[in-house]
Image (cartoon, rainbow, N blue to C red; front, side):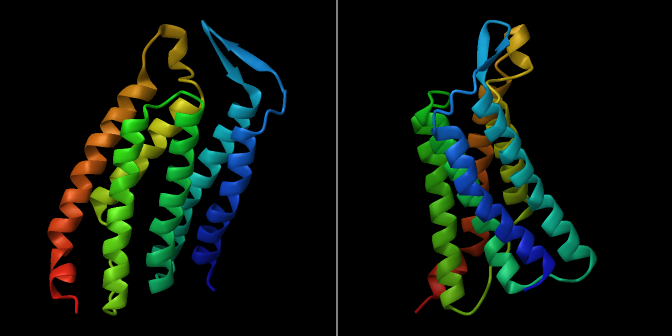
Length: 192
């Protein structure tokens, strides 16, 4: 297994740690942010989420620069993104920082695209992530990071940056799903 794939796997292995940080009441206290409070455990979870998200750029950069792109990497990288983003979104609903309906739509798109990739894999081809899909992932990561940080530093001025970027992520997610299916529909149509 090459280095980019190992980095991708590390992103997957960080997910349970992230979930524990966000879910277990450690009692580490809170930080004051204007009229809002940020639990220290949420800050730690947000930092871990941002680190894990950054590995998405790192593994892709290394894979392209050193010609280490593999079919395993093409499959694992978007899967790792989907697992991390889905875990974070579900936790945001649980702690009351994201509307469930938005999370359901985003995760539904992710399942649909993963299903299309599985059909393609059954036909012997690997569908790589599109540029629109990569943009979608980064907008989701920005929105999730802002929400995990309870909208810091924007909470000081009352600007709902986290929610605005979450709505933007929803729009781009739905559009990129449509675009992905439009470009790859032949895989479903031609499957046996």
